[in-house]
Image 1 (cartoon, rainbow, N blue to C red):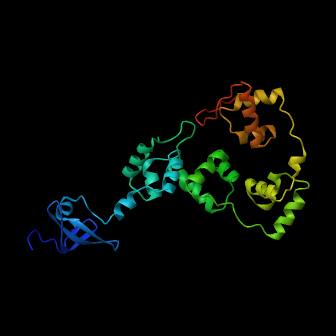
Image 2 (image 1 turned 90 degrees about the horizontal axis):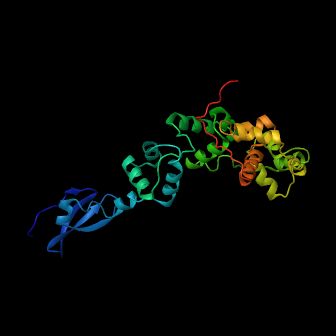
Image 3 (image 1 turned 180 degrees about the horizontal axis):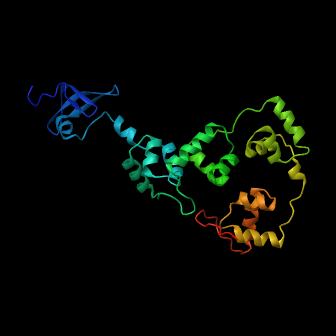
Length: 272
């Protein structure tokens, strides 16, 4: 048979087995074995030029899945291309190309970039089963930031575990005199988990029986003054309020036209 003998030669993932009687544009089609186990017909010129390197599996592997794109959208908020590539098992160039195609920019002006050391520390604390509140205090971050990064890193089921019959009985008894936060601390559960379980069982906690007290003018002035360099959690501790109530009150004030500066870690409070 005329033409170049490619028997046994490897082109990418394809190994040429034998020529066939088929032609395309005047070139012989060779039967090739792919590393994945599939077989494919490829022309001599395509094999020699390197335009065909697999049965198609290589292209599928390079394509980004929906889950990878979702994780990429979260990770760009907190870290760089190299760290994203390491976590997704891709090259930095692949991450950069996909990010540019989606119009995603690294970092968010409202979020400080997370260094590799911080991400490793966060994962270590997660493995130690620390709560979001404990991690936030230890790392000097807001609980909201901790939750966002945990979600980006794939830790979505960290606090989820089955409720035992004994815990459910405790929950019902504790709800008579305690708030959701207090119950969560007693049962060593996440606040969100306790709150959801109370809603599912139609249990009203003590905090819901007590109407929320209004914010005084002094408290309003304090919130406006310190919001730039204190988190909602820190403000809540100073005013003996919950983080959620501070966040909700800020929203109400903004709707009324009150200017409240967003929290910025770069703003350092001066002494005195």
